[in-house]
Every structure is written in C-alpha cells, then in structure tokens.
Amino acid sequence: MLKMIELPYPLNALEPYYSMQTLDLHYHILYKGYVDNTNKTQEKLEKARNTGDFENLKCLEKNLSFFGSGAILHELFFMNMGPAVPTEPSSQLMEQIGKDFGSFEMFKKQFSEASKAVEASGWALLVWVPKWKKLEVLQCEKHQDLTLWGCIPLLVLDMWEHSYYLQYQTKRPEYVNAFWNIVNWNEVNKRYKNIS
Image (cartoon, rainbow, N blue to C red):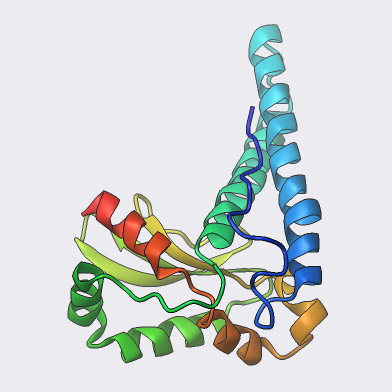
C-alpha cells in the first residue's frame, strides 16, 4: 500500500515563491488523489489476478501508469523544493552539468525553456541516463508520456496548471523563474550521488 510522503517543511515555507494555498491544495488534495488512485488500481489488479478476470486489464494498466507516475513525480517535486536558503549543485553534479550542457547557466536556460514549452499538462525533468552516462532535460506529457526508458529523475518541475495557477495564473514564465529560488539542491545532489 502506497503511503503519502510527509512534507519536510511547513506549508508556508516556500513563500513568497510558492504560496501556502497552492502547496496545501497540491499536497493534500491532488497528490493524495494520485496516491489513493494508485492504491485502488493495485487492489483491482490483485483482484483480477486472484479471480483470473482480466477483462479490464488494459484500463487498469493505463491507470497504474498514470496514477503511479503522478504519485512518484509529485513526491520528487515536493522533495526537491525547500525554503529559500542557499543551496547549490555539488562539485560532482556541477562538473557533469558543465560537461553535458556547457555551463550551469546553459542548463538552467534549457530547463526553463523546456518547462515553459511543456504542452498542456506535464513536467520538466533533469534526468540521468545511465545507458548514455549523461544528463538530459526532458519534457513529460501527463505523468508518463515522452519518457526515456531507464532514465533516473533528479530534478522535476510540475507544469500542470494546478501547480501554479492560483498564484501565477497564466504567467508560466514567472512560475518557472520563481522555482529556481526554492530548488533544494541538497536533495538533487543526494539523488545524483546515489546513481554515480
């Protein structure tokens, strides 16, 4: 049974860059919905296995992909943010960013532009691709489309409207710019260290 992660900071900790009202709605309603629906889908899959009735398997597998990916990406998103205290990429991560993007500023520009250009509902991600031994920036539609097999998310930015509309309304670029003030690089560094 999937359980909701606990936020490592109070609801108002990301102000003024990410409003308490948005975080409260995002965490307690939307993220909770992904966790609950993942659990319901897993229960239905277990029932299908136990009864041998796989008539709705295609729908259940689609739901598992959508809701499960939504739960995982939201957990990464909440954990890779933190109060606006100075953090920065580790020397190892900074070296890899320089190698793969040319410089930190070029990475930040590419990630920001990818975020702003996400079509409809989706995500921007900095990922490690083990097969290529390099970092890449990806856009992900919904929670599960346009991904690279085997990639490991390091930094994610939720670009669904529910992530920013209460505070930024249609001003996506302002939301993306504000995000850089609350990136918890310590968490991103930890994820990178675990794979390198």
